Image (cartoon, rainbow, N blue to C red):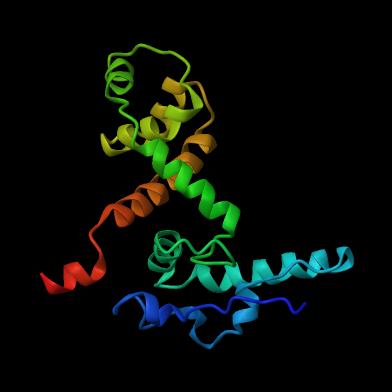
Length: 178
C-alpha cells in the first residue's frame, strides 16, 4: 500500500497580508516542514530536518499567524510557526490553563501571602501578575521559584495567550466583511 502524505497548504493561502508578505518558508522545501519517521538509523535526520524548519520559522514575520492557523485548522502534522505537533498541543493545553480564574490567588499574592501554586494555575498567575507589572524577580520570590523559571513561563504564557486570543477571535472572513 502506498503511503499517503499530506502536502502543506501554502501559508499564503491560510493567512491574509500583511502577515504573509515576507513568509520565510515561501521558497523553502516543504519536506523540511514535514519530517517523516524513517528507519531508526534515520531518526537523527528527522531531528535535523525539524531543527532546520524551526530555524527558518524563527525570523519569520508570519510565525504567529502560521502557528494559530495550524491550531485553528486542526493541522497536527509537521512544523508550523516553528512548533512541532507536540509543542502545539502543549500550547493548546497552556491556553486552556490561561482561562482559569486565578483572581483570588493573585489577590492573595499581592497582599503578601505566600503559598505553593498548583501546576494548572502557574501560567495564568504568572501572566496576570506580569500584566500588573510585577518584575521577574518579584514573581520568583513570591512563588519560590528561580527567575529563569519565571522568564520561561512568561514566554509560554505570552504565546499561549496570543494563540488563545486568535482562536477565540471571529473567523477572518467575518472580520473582513465587517
